[in-house]
Amino acid sequence: MEPQEAAVEGTTLSQYLLNVARERVNSLEGEVRHSVPDTLFAKRGGQDGVLDLVTLLQSIKLAIKSVGSLVRSAGIPGSGVTVPQERGKEGDIANGSRLLCQELNAHANQIWINALLYSQRSCVLVSEELPDPVIVQEDMQGKYAVVFDPLTGLSDPPAQNMGAIFGIFRQLSGGNPGIVDVMQPARNLVAAGYALYGACTVLMFSAGYGAQQFVLDTSLNEFILTEPNVTLPYSGAIYSINEGYAAEYDSETQEMLKCLKAEPAMDGRSRTCRYIGSMVADIHRTFKKGGIFMYPPHQRGFPNGRLKLLYEAGPMAYLVSQAGGQASTGTEHIIDIVPDSIHTRVPVFLGSEDDVNFATGFYNKKAPWGRSDQDPMFMLRRTLSREEKKRELPKSNTPRASDVVDDGIIAFHIG
Ligand code: FDP
Image 1: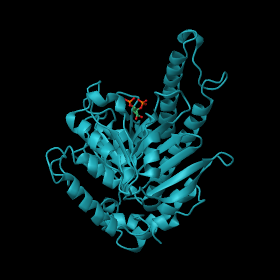
Image 2 (image 1 turned 90 degrees about the horizontal axis):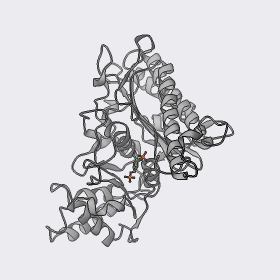
Image 3 (image 1 turned 180 degrees about the vertical axis):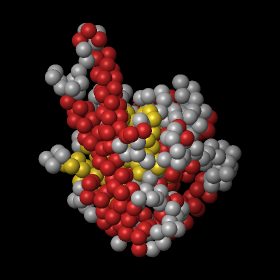
Image 4 (image 1 turned 180 degrees about the horizontal axis):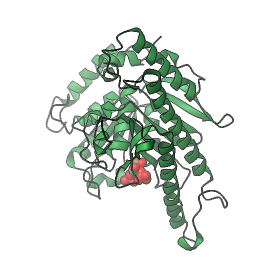
């Protein structure tokens, strides 16, 4: 049985992880155990190695549940997170809300660090909240390097569309763990996910066998699998970008936005814009409805874009690839970029294949369509290409993880 076949709606996250782990061990034992480079679970140590990753993921699950409940109760007197009165300016709601977010952020970071340290399965931790990596002390070390943003989407009032993002790499170096263990492209991730603290807590997750969506059942306090094979639509009508920066985007971005709005989506629907300002929430909608999420460079403080490669754009690019979408900086696949520092920022264009190809065509002369203002054949070639793609699309429009292997997207996991 393929691991993704073990993904049945209603399964708990713990059961799902054990199913995938068991299938992985069985396939290693049955076939070509010695020639398969095992990056998903441990290379040596068989069952123990598999359980190491499962244990680490259980700790991450605990961190997500703890932060989720803090987010929901933040600000209520007596809850874990409140703003000390002397710090908020009396009557200044905006300031109070900002301080509350800062408090929440600090708590969330500590919860993640504690959960990962006490799992005893990690060796290097990189958090968006800390300037330097944490190297886990020797007697608590495991084999995995974990990168994470414990709480993102802090510009809005607390409890609205906040989320967390994480990625797990296998330790690269054989010896002492160090920064080198996280300087890997997202393609090397062994698992990644995001949590969205919305009306319910949603976990989007992948361990290299497609993307799965889990929802926290509060009566059981357990994540339940609700979508075993999350698939991004090939094209969508929604574009998501902060248009407040329109004048500060470069000329390619401005031109791309103009054309995007002028042209209907592939199915003929007019385009519509949605921007929450929390990447987890904006990307979650993109997973569900298709379209494109963008954070391009702009001259109001973020000349390389705002989002961080290692623990924001990278894990999201990995998830989106697993769900049949694309993620680009405009000129490069995000999944292939090796970070040059732990807090490197990159431009992000992520979502449905058709829409990402369209947007990135404006930055990359080698991309299929070139720039509209320089290329009179622009619209014609785009239309022809889309017509071809429409004919190619299977009825269900849902590529399975096994199809994706052929594209080399998850082939790196299975040798
Ligand atoms: P935030 O700083 O509010 O935590 O991670 C950065 C981020 O959120 C993203 O979640 C979000 O998409 C982006 O900032 C919003 O930036 P703008 O306000 O510049 O649009």
